[in-house]
Image (cartoon, rainbow, N blue to C red):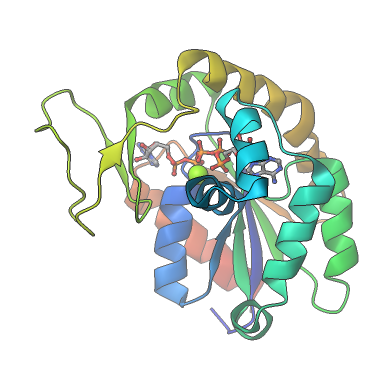
Length: 219
Ligand code: AP5
Ligand code: MG
């Protein structure tokens, strides 16, 4: 990838956005900007934003557009994102956020938006089995045969289930995706920035498809 590429990865909760963005960010050495990770860090640090966001996130709701746009705007101005480009994971999530993002990136517009397409039944199964390292964010899939306590192979942190991965919160998040986030597919499709990638393939196949799209978009 040519340095300076700016990407958005869209997709349902559990589509594999985080999994692929971690890998893409290592492969291309560009920052992975995950608004979910930023909010979870604020929750862990107990900041004012974290305290407010935790209640919303645990129920599977969406944090307000103004707060999210402010957070992302600040993050995109940091030197690494300004010089190396970035991969956005979990932002934008509403048409309002997408319009604001266009407003704050007029000087350096987004190159490509990828929709990682995975049907609802598949993501529900994936999320139920997901376990995440609380410290470094590495994802694992539970088989029920893991040793307890479960220690992260990458950093030695505690591997846990996310607080919003309860069945009620998962269904609420997926309903909100259909209402608020799915319209982005048309928003970015209309102006030709969208490419759809089949996210039901193996993680290696999805990674291969993503890198192909990214390289093509930068030729
Ligand atoms: P966020 O952290 O962004 O969560 P999400 O959108 O709900 O997405 P997930 O992280 O659940 O899914 P993912 O696509 O990253 O899948 P993953 O790679 O983990 O947001 C959390 C909350 O923060 C929101 O609900 C909201 O409250 C708030 N928030 C964040 N951004 C916001 C915004 N912009 N505006 C307002 N509020 C915001 O993969 C899932 C599982 O599948 C893993 O176990 C993985 O190992 C497995 N897997 C991945 N790929 C494959 C594959 N190819 N085959 C088989 N299994 C796979
Ligand atoms: Mg994620």
